[in-house]
Length: 363
Ligand code: NAD
Image 1: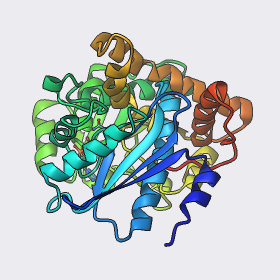
Image 2: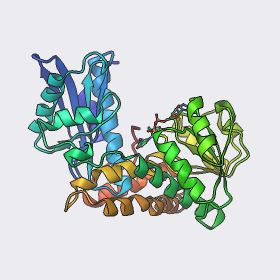
Image 3: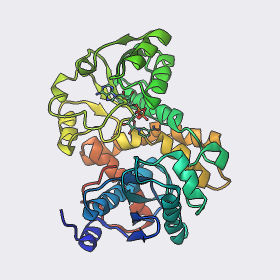
């Protein structure tokens, strides 16, 4: 696909794109800034062997816009940006290349703040940090939040409780049956939280070792991965992959609520409409999984990183999900669209942006 960058930017409201080239290290990268209405444009740096430069630029522009929505809906005062480095992270990544990238980030003087994403690691962020202060995701020994997955898990469970209150009039998960897909970094922590809340959980994972761990350490049942959708449960909890709410899985679902940490769970937006038609309550993914982001970016707030404040804000995901319910009811919108509107209203409150009719790019 050939991209006409300026037309794309005018259509979706982007502010700036920087193309980066460093002949000495072979660095080729794109930094896209969608909005700085709420604060500096922030978003991770992805390293990927894009097939074309157009594809890399399109990805940066699309992901930057998704970050604007994510921060705005999460109540974080940051704008949306994203960096992409063109190359294979397994073979093309060198210290010199990352440091050259760090110098480009630095040249924006804080208008863009970077972090980890697919193809980059916390260690890579430490390397970039050698060249610029404008890095948010960092290991604890560099003053960063370190592992953010406990905050992501807590936020997703708070979102689940908000959905429970909407459906059953109480946020309690006591005795609620939950089908949990994915026992990875976040899912394993969410499992412990759900059990503490008194839920009755059935789990699955492609990795048999993780299922074995769950059966040995917790009072749970397990099913094969393909059976998880059709479990007779109250809540389906996706903690694995995106795209799992689709034409094939929706007819299998027997739950009332879908809430977890997985990103981009709707295969297409029309599947969000279908959930609505079937009366399923969906904790919109980019709000439900914003706990890690809220925790991680607390260090950019006044006074520096304060774990208690950060965790209190993670818990507020409960209220955010209720705000989405209220907007959906008032405007007769499906929940995924109401979340977009929540973000748009927050931005529009600070800056007049004509985003209201545009579909949202997904991270
Ligand atoms: P992870 O890779 O540690 O865990 C994912 C788990 O899902 C793995 O154990 C994998 O074996 C399992 N899995 C994959 N496909 C499956 C399938 N078809 N059926 C059953 N199990 C399957 O990832 P994670 O960091 O725990 O993240 C989980 C999800 O949450 C992802 O979608 C991620 O994008 C999202 N998320 C994570 C964070 C975070 O803080 N790590 C933040 C926001 C969003």
